[in-house]
Amino acid sequence: MTRTEIDTALQSAHAAGDRAGLSRLYALAADAVALPAETAFLLTQAYVFALDAGLPEATALKGRLQEMGAER
Amino acid sequence: MPKDRPDTPQDAVSAPIERARGLSNPHYTDPATYAAETRSVLASGWSGLGVASDVPDPGDAVPVDFLGQPLLMLRDNDGAVRVFQNVCRHRGMILVEAPRKIEGAIRCPYHSWCYAKDGRLVATPHVGGPGQNAHDAIDRATLGLWEVRSHIWRDVVFVNLSGEAAPFEEAHADLIARWAEFDKPLFHGGPESRFSLELETNWKLAVENYCESYHLPWVHPGLNVYSRLEDHYNIEAPGLYSGQGTLVYRQLRGDDGGVFPDFDGLSDKWDTAAEYVALWPNVLLGVHRDHAFAIVIEPHGMTRSVERIHLYYPTPDTDPALRAKNAAQWKTVFEEDIFVVEGMQRGRSSGAFDGGRFSPAMDGPVHLFHQWVAGRLAADDAH
Image (cartoon, rainbow over all chains, first blue to last red):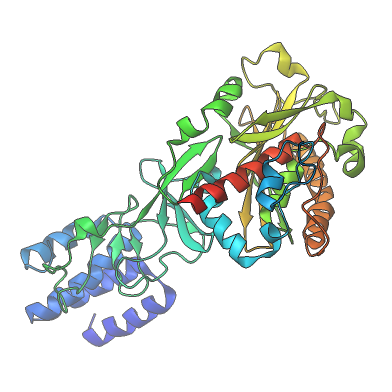
């Protein structure tokens, strides 16, 4: 997916309250950016929606954030 | 020479029943007295909030507005029912607006601070700036949800908002012992065994009406066919609870003659006995050989109350048609009480009403409740 496609899908997922979709799409977006600060921001979004939805991916996302020094 | 008429409303309530008058009008019509009772009577002890069956599965969450406070009743992943203040520790936002399943964390809809189902604060996104989810000033270990002291008995979730009451088992040891034979698993009868009644009355009048049998022949003539006034007795535990019992309980029968199974191990006394107790302040309980019920009265302001009624059975597989028949019968009984509790509320607007006189023979349970309310207020005033 292009970044534009991801952004469009994110808007739809937000409108639908699709937390699993939001987590997956924010994680995709995080992998598509280069700046560490932007990656941390997007991974945080992915992590929070994974936590909210009770997704097992939350653990790995938290680990990535911890490795970046963005989470304790 | 003994006084025939007590001097003050407080004296009037605390006098022996032969000379006593009931709680005065301001207890039902004065906002300041309502506020004082909310603090001294409802918040300081163990009040009913709901029932554990409202949150049957892990993650089930029900927001409850109780005494003007937003609370959240939640079953955690270990199956324990907990009660929290339903507000985020960040900006005080309401966390859960409507009953729902919490699948993962409780995420605040404002800035997405996340709480585990046991109340721990587990995520604070961007709290240190974009992409920085921690900050030295934000100690998550000290910022969990405020938990409200709670205790479950007979499926009722009791809360002690002040946090200062004696432990529930200690505070209510007397009734727990009285009904020890009924300390058995209770199975909620399901959707048809759960109903609510909205009442235009102060919550206390619903308690008062429930705990006496004097009104039965007049207000519940259907009950009286088999349950005459002389078959009832008063239950009086000063400072704790009051109610009434019957000696002629008869089991409900279905169209095929079937009955509900009995609770295991009951003594012969309960073959024909049943008891109805108002566990002060706001929980009404009933026990019979083959079913039980719990009513939680929610005070919604000075002159409005909601009764949440739940019926329980000794086994999970009772006859649905018989359950429906039993629920319909009880609903009829409780609806018959509406006009009296609402009529008494309107009667409290009479400038002439002086609290009323009691029947020394029949009104003991009501008088004890009034004494308890007045005593709780006086104790707080003394502080």
